[in-house]
Image (tube, rainbow, N blue to C red; front, top):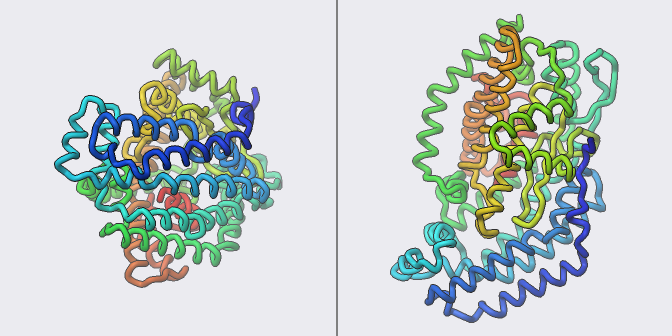
Length: 505
């Protein structure tokens, strides 16, 4: 079974020809609608303009096939300067052209309220009703066209390059640690994360020590990175008139701030206590006086089962076909077309993700499979996203081909749960306890820990906006506050996890 991405679907495109088409399409749209106000007055004209804008998104947004290809190659080879430069070039190219049509959405947002109702009730615009409703609702946070262009142009030096720097530095790092047979081997950053969950204390402690050395090596750099990102966010929020650091995310995710606050309050009040009790129980079962932060995911018990990639594929595939034949077919097509990059290697991005680019491009999934029980869950999780992408392609216009964070994890966690249920059918009582224990732990990670991270990040922004700079010492004070409850962010992971969190902005 092939386990690295196949880019034939992207490389069949003539990139030079595509760039010319992208430029022509954007400039043609600009020239046609820039000085034409009819689409702001007549539903039938707006329908035509939105159809043309949708075609732009479908065929050319984000730099087309070339942009997608180099974005993915970066994830495979984060230390490859040549690839980074090529992605930067196509990104700049698209940013420039995207700024040429910024006027379109901004003008739509300025439509007087009495006319907004006319557009929202028009049967001609029914496919765009939700888009227009969101646009009208968020228009007050939009800046003038020139200012919006500056915001876009500054995002790369004030944010993107900072986050890529830390990610690239970490993926280059390897250390000599112990493998599962207690033999000294060289392991990458993502592989060390897995070894820190090992039941063998000697193995996990040495991996944690090596991992911590890597983070400490870059901690001074990360201090500047973090402050740059916090300052950039502060500037953007002040310009747009957001009163809270998380308000823009709520608007983007189409969810009311009051609902988020209620959720955070509820989980913080009850969920943290559940988390504390769970980890107290786990430390007793593992005969540990106290769990260190990196020990929170030590596997309880031992499942004498094969969690190799091949066996994981068979299990997940069986579950998907049992749910719906279409789900299984999508999964098999991903494997056949090599849309999944499976194993960790030096230079490869850590973690896992499912990436969609547009309705006409294939979805690609990145894993770092190390034959652990948790890797089966990750495979099901990312394929849940993938199936959601394929189903959206059947129904959604390109302009709506996206999932807000408020609903993005529904499909993925849905699939995880069915894989758990399937595993429970095949095991004895002792193994069932181990799997259920893992399920509770996963739920704590998905719900309680994410709320803790949310609280932590929110306080970082609030503290920065009062002090105008966060040193490593300041960060430690906040970190220790949140470290008092098991399941909250603390310890040596602060830097990497903050980069992951802040990449959401």
